[in-house]
Length: 203
Image (cartoon, rainbow, N blue to C red; front, side, top):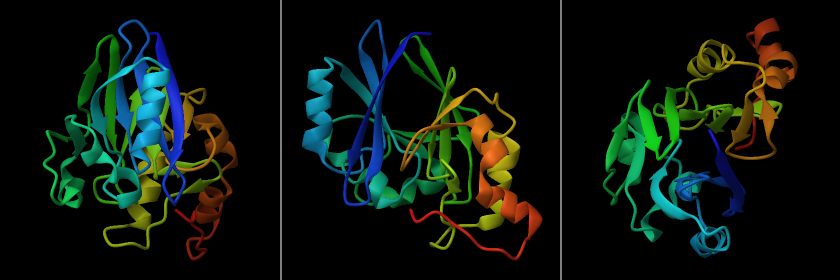
C-alpha cells in the first residue's frame, strides 16, 4: 500500500485536518475539515491531489466546520449524523465498514466515548484517531453525549489490541504510536489505578 499524508492545522481549536491520498491515482480523502477551507484547498492544489470524499471522525464543530465548502460526499458515523445540521451525509458509517479509496482500504472502528458516534480510521499502519486518543491524553467526555467509561473501553478494547507500531494521527496535537500510548499514556494508567481520579485532554 502506497499512500501520501498531509496534515493541516485548522480553526481556532487547532484541529488536525488530514489529506490521505492513494499515491498512484492522487485521489484523497479529506479527514475532518474543521475550518480554514482556503488553506485546505491550497494544500490540495500544491500536492496535486484530488479529493473524493470527506470523512468526519465525529460531529463536533471543530471537525466538520468546512464540510459545506467542498462539493464532496460526506461520511460520518450514524450516531453523530445529526450534528451535521443542514448538511446531508452521503454515507452513514458503522463499526467494521470498509471505505475504498482506489488502492487504499480504510477500516472504520467505532470508538464511542468522546461522542456517541466517534470513529477511528485504520489504513494499513496508520490510525486516524479523531478525539478518542491523543499523544499522552484522551478526548474529553464532559460534553453532551460523552461517556468516560465508553471512552476507556473503546481505547483499551478496540485500539490497544492493534499492533504497537501503528502510527496514530490524532485530531489535535502531535503524532504518536499505539505502543507508546499503551505503555506511557499517564491518563489511562491513572484511571486504571484510581477510578476516582479525573483527567482529560482539553479538546
